[in-house]
Image (cartoon, rainbow, N blue to C red):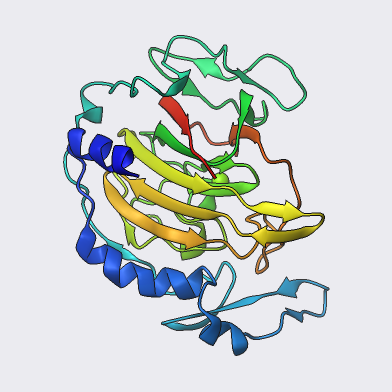
Length: 291
Ligand code: MG
């Protein structure tokens, strides 16, 4: 942890400590770590056409999963950072997955060579090509990813600059959430369907943004999860997920429901989502962590 903090300081990133303490309260409840709210949790219901509706209790009340009426996090302007003018470098002990030159560390789930576009120092999703995944597998890790949603704004809500960074089975949402209303548990930097970011720290469309993610994997015993995964996410130098413990999966499960845990291996590829919108990525590196 010491090394991680030092690295962030060197890069001039500012973690908004003030928000962090407020956030803890919210994420503990939203993320499900609080027991008080869970005892009152509403049972999932079914609509006439068979759709499941799940609820979550939060400090702002009880909301459906993917509820557009849920209060959105405060919008802030992130501090300046070098990534608009120059690409940073990875720490010396990191595994570099993408340095802007080639896609040799990436493949598709079916083993086919990566079909995303290689641009000048970046790669870009190709509609219909499918998710990319790293050839190497990882468990608990620190991950750095930079991304840019399209500079030409097109679409709305979940259809604007949608992609995602998957660690194992869990998505950190990538979305153009700059003046783009959507359900807060699916906006940029959300742990999709599970945890709303503490603040909206998005840059403008087309600008480079960064995620620094500290992930501790779940442990399964048979089909049971005996240790839940945790995420800390820093978006453009701002803490947006504060050691959030997930209480299930992040897969789409209908308009107002979300998936449960699905048992998986101890190490898995890191994945980048093709959600049919052209999103760019660069400067991707990972540092495996002890469990
Ligand atoms: Mg996504």
